[in-house]
Length: 440
Image 1 (cartoon, rainbow, N blue to C red):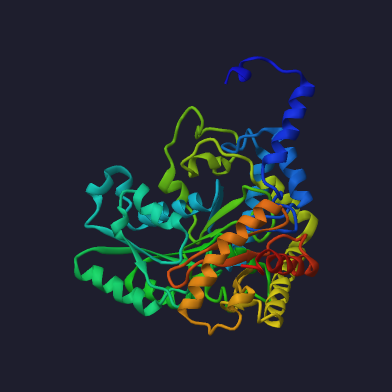
Image 2 (cartoon, rainbow, N blue to C red; image 1 turned 90 degrees about the vertical axis):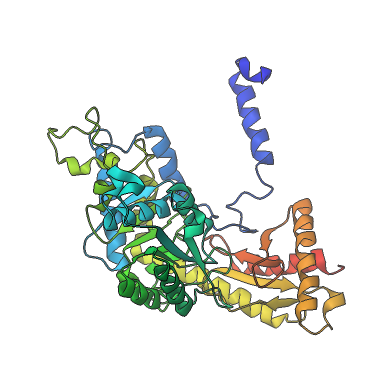
């Protein structure tokens, strides 16, 4: 800490910056051999927008401070709602998909129990209960903890072998909690699960929500980009317009720089009604313009980073058609990887046909290739994943993630969401995994 107290020359500061970037990660996330996380790639137009945003250093809470950016946000988010299939509604950019999901929860509770805002839990007629798949992002369960439900009242619904919520189990669990006197009010569907990339049955869940008067939220933080593709939108998003709210992160499949997360509502006015605190020193009602453009009172943050300019600039450069081509290309590369895995069936085992850009597989070293594929073999394959990952990190040639799930020991999950990736990079990934693990 003593070194932080004294001023350094500019040249020394630049050298420090170079040193930092040598140790950030062995592959920058924009490198085409980075297949590790859901947010990767480096869109140069979006990057330019982020640089200019930092230069402007503008807060997004009032129109008078950020007039152009507020209008950009209005135009882009309206377009995204149109793509979802809504003619009206409201949206906001939030600091990440977890907070977007939190906004959905807050709006749902406010819509169904508006007295909660003033009275808290004393204004509720009973115990509220929410429902989500066991494959959902952990932020859904976090909503229950943060907002006072308690995680015991976030009911985890079983999923099938492909990672999709079992709709009949959802209904059974709703009836079970109703029989106890609890109040089911919120159901989360996932469009692109974090590990398997699975898409829940939107229409099936919507039917249940309609039947039992529950708010339906879709966490499409990961898979939302496929809404842009006429080829891949259906059946993944069939029925999406029936949802009450949707999280959609352009910083994932659409390639915008971190962070760029959106939350959309079918009903207009909920965000302001739920979150408005009417601070008179900031949100005066007698301003000379339409105060509906003062977006700061619609959110819980007050200060809000400008996340729209990089997305607006990217959209101007690509157009909607360009985003569609980008999504189709990513899915084309996924199918290429699946084809190459099947062509090397002695070395690789494909766990399931991917719905998104997540490809789940095992590497099979030489000593296990003659072994029947059963649970014992899967245990052995699972032990190999962390060893290969360690060798990747030591060599600095590749980065692919691994994890277990509730049905399987460790397996590799590669992610192709970077526009820089080519078929040659996919071949390199598989060849390098083989090189690193053949002797195990």
